[in-house]
Image (cartoon, rainbow, N blue to C red; front, side, top):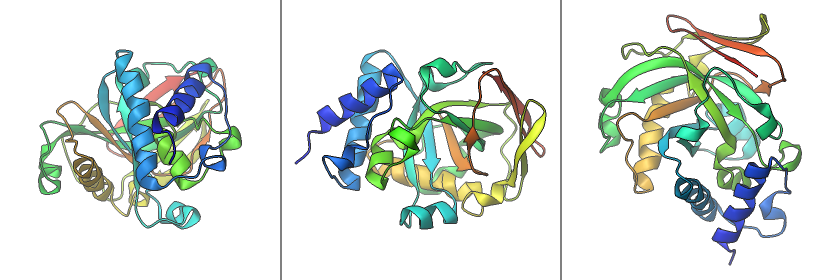
Length: 247
């Protein structure tokens, strides 16, 4: 048996210190259920320091990533208010940050079932997520990345728009005015609405409900790219405007 509290402390301290550690499963193998228990313990440590839950992020939302990791379902992590980026991201607190374009959903009312999650959406926006695995060289097993809160670090979003279907919205990410990634929301499980439903399913399965004011990041529409210092990033979504952040 592994010590969930000890593993959570190691991950939490690595994040606070900005220090990479070896994958936890190398010394103490554990399964996916235990990994989620570690994830929740990490978030509980953050909550005891005053952070508030702010939403859910989805991971492994592309078929290629599922195949790479040998899984047939998405994974998820939790967002807190301390992860919300303003106009800038302080990279000095991160280990090896990467950024990816996202579709973001704003939850307008408590979600009590998967069937009602789409009607509970109050807005949609283009967004971004900054990933920062706490593991050395960004290498990990499936249980490792789940325990590490699915590599969540920072997130942001643009202006909220009225809810709409986004099965094939074009996305462009630029760094210092240079296009670095282009893609479509169709890369997110074929339609980001499927990821939204998965978020509700996984949260409810864990005894949680998506809450009013929470944000759901549906998952990456492209591969993540390294986030350099002193950079300006802009993510634009067709019909959704843009969101910008500097480092």
